[in-house]
Amino acid sequence: MTIAAPLTAQSGIHPHPTYKTDIAIVGAGIVGATLACALKDSGLSITLIEAQPQEQAASKRQAYALTLMSGKIFEKLGVWEEILTQIVKFDQIQISDANQWVVDLTPEDLGTDHLGYVGEHGVILTALQQQINQSEQIQWLCPAEVQEVRYFDDFAQVWVNSAEHPEPVVIESRLVIATDGSKSPIRQAADISTQGWRYWQSCVATTIKTEKPHHNVAFERFWYTGPMGVLPLPGNRVQVVWTAPHEQAEALQQLDEAEFLRRLEYRTAGILGRLELAGPRFVFPVQLMQCDRYVDHRLALAGDAAHCCHPVGGQGLNLGIRDAATLAEVIKTAHTQNQDIGQLENLKPYQQWRKPQNWMILGFTDFLDRMFSTDWFPVVWTRRLGLLFLQKFRIGRYFSLRLMTGLMGRAPGIN
Image 1: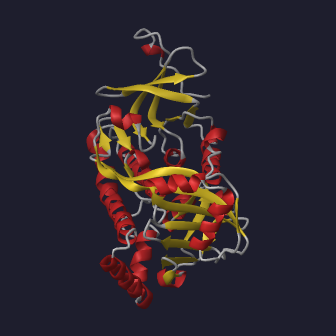
Image 2: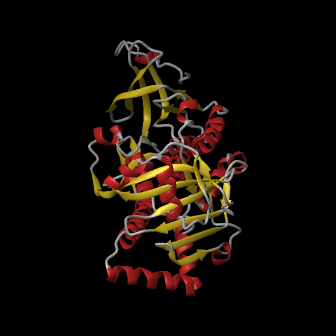
Image 3: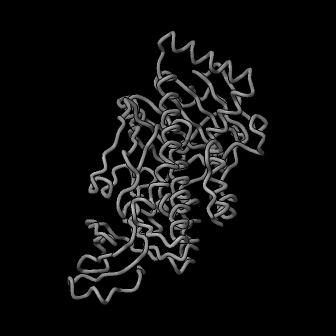
């Protein structure tokens, strides 16, 4: 563990070791690590507080769809070259309604070389960690757990329990940034309320080995019980995210392997041939959540700590990556203008920038799930008319892809 130099002037106030930093980032997952990388050349000192050791944090078995905008952000941060060699570019998105009414979206519809990427958690986070570890401006405090945060006029105190210290460590910071997940203790302690709801569905996520090549195609297969995303991975593997009502999702996890694969082969219409499990099955509930505010005095929220959406379309992590890049840009602008980076007025541009864009994606994913997760006849024909429109008119495919790839709306410049 390495942390910033101790504040000897504070030693008489309380007996706990006290350290000073400009920014304390609580949560060093992909969003927190992206934010740290985006700030590494800002001249600001940064302390990353993470509950798990770096290797353990990177060992999570999960894969994500990455948008074209996320790729642009990682490229500007200098980590993309390392990531790109270990992930898959997908050249086609195939949308279908109950194995019928198939619509293919291709790079020609958008005027790009490809439509997105699929990367595993460990690949992305390890590349970010390596970049962070080369910076003298960024220090780690891990494994460690935040006990409480105290806010004052000119700074905040983050009280942290660390295995390497017998008593709590106090981090004195000009700004605290919470990237600590949808149940963010930092957000809850700050009494920031949220809007939204839990869906009637959960997701079963797993990695599958396929008999037939996936040809770098990403599938979004809608069914009246919920959508299924099938994302191509290296080594003739795919990541499956199968949405179903809670009880059905739990039952799918508990099925014996042969029956689970038989049902999955049916849902994928045999396109990928015979399937084999290449990892455990995880179940997680899904929710739509939006915070009433992303910023407060000496505090900012990013990623799942600020918002959550349905996994249909693979947008969740990408919203957090854009949050991180945008927040870094706002902070650096304030710093270069000699403004207080923790003052609420200097943080508001981040909220004004990101909150409307996030609402757009939250609404889009909610609409897709509700429109396709029903077998009510009028809705079925309405959505099939929508698919027919996409199939016949390129302009519909163009604007849909602009939204899905993160290219619609104001983009962070990573200045």
